[in-house]
Amino acid sequence: MTSTATDLSQTPTHSETSTDRDLITARHLINGEWLGAADTERINPARPGELAVLSPTGTAADVDAAISAATAAQPAWAALPAPARGAILMAAGDLLLSRQAAIAADLVREEGKTLAEAKGEVKRASDVLRFFGSLGWAATGEVLPSGLPDTTITTRREPLGVVGLITPWNFPIAIPAWKSAPALISGNAVVIKPAELTPLSATHLARALQDAGLPAGVFNVVHGKGRVVGDALARDPRIAGLSFTGSTKVGLGLQEILNARRARVQLEMGGKNGVLVLDDADARKAAKVVAAGAFGLTGQACTATSRVYVTPGIREEFLAALVEEAAAYTPGDGLGRDGSSPAAMGAVVSRQQFEQDQAAVRGAVERGATLLCGEYDGGTDAGYLFPAAVLTDLPFDDAAVTEEIFGPVVAVLEVPDYEAGLAAVNDSRYGLTAGICTDSLAFATDFAARAQAGVIKVNRPTAGLDLNVPFGGVKDSSTNTFREQGKSALDFFTWGKTVYTGV
Ligand code: NAD
Image (cartoon, rainbow, N blue to C red):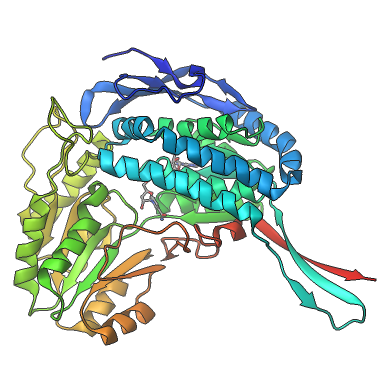
């Protein structure tokens, strides 16, 4: 393994970070100090022989120290005028953008996605910080009439205090940014536990916030295992609210812990997002929409398309076009390899996830499904490179149709008509995103009203979201109480107060 270390905590401004270094070290950030022995290795999933990042293994004591720092720092942070808080967020957004190329390269090495996807994600994190920073100037609260004489009623939003954030590996800088920014602009202090597989990307976010002038203790990072660091965060009574994104299994466990101590909890979890393709759609356009949703980001998006229902008249043409589209998503090293250009589709994040994808496809085929493309042909020496797979001829209750795979795999099933297709899309424990490909305004409008998902896409891929609009799911995809992103994200991180003022 290569080991020329560049310690992120030691880099004075970090703007000189180069893309050709072969190792970087993440640390905890506690009370403004970079701490922890970086003893956990993470390999590059596109080059399994290469070390991508070293990070510390946090303990409950680290979490305790981070929460103590956040508790001490929060009142002064909340007392700062909101535009001053916003200015720091906007400056951090600018810093992320100025470091975009270097951070994106690190993100590719630790997560496996393509450089273009990683650059887009860093830009998104920057935009998110700038968006919420600008809200420092936006009025919140209302002035309302009172039934009493000489009385004015106003409403205010107050910060929760110290909040905990637990994030997954698949958007390792964007998700930490879209949780942190609304928390911070609202006057909260933060303790974040990033995913074990991607410690570096969140560390870049922390570095940008620190370099932008965020006071010590307002934003703290503790790396490590979910069941140690994440659990300690969830159980600490000083954490007034916990926002989690990750698997449904872990999320529901956290919900019990938070509910037991009556603290606020926000969960964004798994998905099994369905698309309905109707006879009146353009088969090629529909195939492009489905392929982008299913194979973009290596299928490792909670919003990825993983099941498609087609009506009989378009089935053959659509499947042929989808297989053609899938061929364009050749997996490889997102940074390029041996002088070749970056791959069209990145690597799967880990051996475990790779084996999970493989088992899902093999299992479906053993149960009688037809694999139209995505034949997997062997080892992982050249990286966890999984081909874009299209399955068909499956029963509606096959595991490949009902359970989240989280890889570049899509199942295509035939339905007799629109109503049967809508029912099939809704027949799921999940409800994150749902899509329809149609030229019919009537079907599109009906689908938007009746599909059971938090986000509906008409003739657009199920994956891919704007930062200024609400995002979240229903059923087992979400707590379905507070939405993320846009101004709605502020609701989770604040509580409402009604003030009567008499003269
Ligand atoms: P995961 O649930 O394994 O881990 C998510 C985070 O929780 C990690 O930081 C992990 O360390 C932590 N964690 C694990 N066990 C814990 C415990 N016992 N207590 C506290 N924290 C714990 O998920 P993942 O593999 O990192 O991410 C993939 C999953 O995330 C998929 O199911 C995907 O659908 C989901 N996801 C959802 C959204 C969304 O917005 N709905 C977005 C991205 C990913």
